[in-house]
Amino acid sequence: MDALSDALRALRVSGSMFIDAELKAPWAVVTPSSCDIASALGVETDRVIPYHLVTHGECVVTVEGHAARQLGAGDIALFPHGDVHVLASHEGVAPLTLSREFAKRALARRSILPIRHGGAGNPTRLLCGFFAIERCGGNHVIGGLPALLTARVGTEGGRNLLAAVARGSIEAHVAGGPGSEAMVCKLSEILFVDALRQFVSSGAVPVQGWLAGLRDPAICHALSLIHNQPQHAWDVQSLASACAFSRSKFVARFTSLVGSSPMKYLGQWRMILAARDLSDGNISVMQVADRYGYGSEAAFTRAFRKMFDVPPATFRRASRRGEGDSTDAT
Image 1 (cartoon, helix red, strand yellow):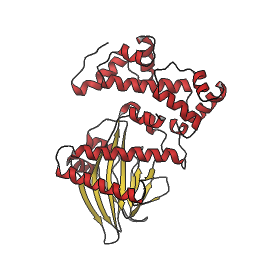
Image 2 (cartoon, helix red, strand yellow):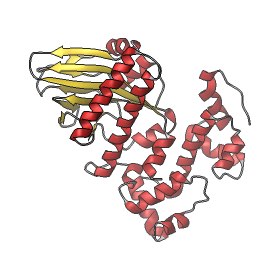
Image 3 (tube, helix red, strand yellow):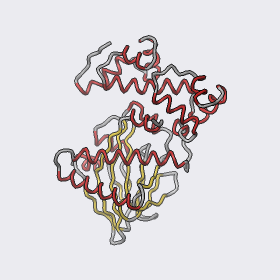
Image 4 (cartoon, one colour):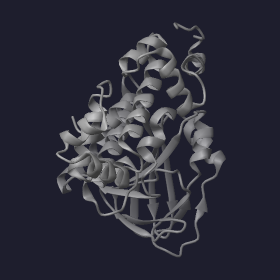
């Protein structure tokens, strides 16, 4: 398994679409902040990532402090840190501000909101939505990404197919019926994964953290080993040998690219997985400690508390409170 797939598999990503927009030039809109979207959703996550998929026409997207970027049919724009941004038919158009109240009304519908706005010029069609990223591990995956991430969805035929699938998903969602909401969510998640995969593989834009390590074959191999076998008794020498590096060269290269030492990264990854297990499963703290190679519950608790500021039992109670389960199995 590759390191990116393993990391995304460990992350909880929920996606949805909530606007189907047809905009005729001249037009421009300022989006609500990710905080407003999260508030409207009533969710507590590390990240709410807005996205826009262009299915027809073209537009310009701008994030404050960054150059404007042109988008065409089949392009998707994501905002990993939830920056407020402007979408427009072209630069220089006075934008309409989409308020927090607008976001609440749109999301409260529980269906796709059709938007028609602008003048009498060339039309642009957008599908707009968001990805909600869970607290545990969200910053690990997203932290090194830029303010604006764009990707092109497939080939020309692939883009047409995606647009057709997206519109079919929307029509099913609006019509209701079994599985219609799941269709839209899964399509959104596919868009997120594909955009991230393209960004990592392209190497066109500098990136920080473990994502930078994915662009180096040797360090990517080490990350794959850590992600796929977190319970293994890895040490610096075994990882260096697996990458055909000397110990010192491996540590220097890993630390330079990823931003932390191999052993620190391994510990953080284990804690992310442990937090997920504590939230999801009916499993004791000691079982989780054993699962990730800790010799005692006390050692595991110290490591967990260092990362999350609370002991594992307290973390589990808090994560399950919404489910009405406040019991421990320690």
